[in-house]
Amino acid sequence: MALPNDPVMLLSVINLKLRDFYSSLDALCDDLYEDKTALCAKLSAIGYTYDPQRNQFV
Image (cartoon, rainbow, N blue to C red; front, side, top):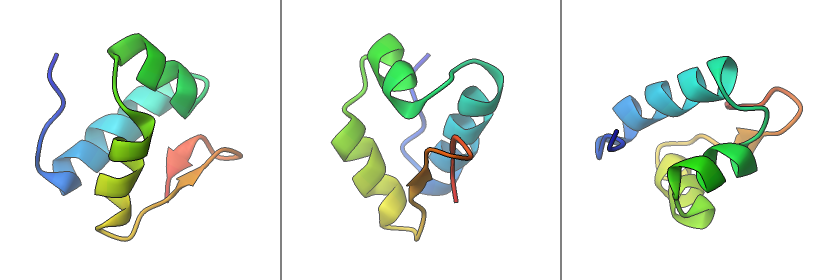
């Protein structure tokens, strides 16, 4: 499954996957072959950062 390009849709999909399928952002990026830095930068552009304690972007 390709991740959405729209940052808001991306946020929704990533948080859903983190909640339901992955124990960490590293695990998600490794499994989906995504660049963690690029993903974080895209979501940071709309004001969200990854919180490892909550395992979600907030």
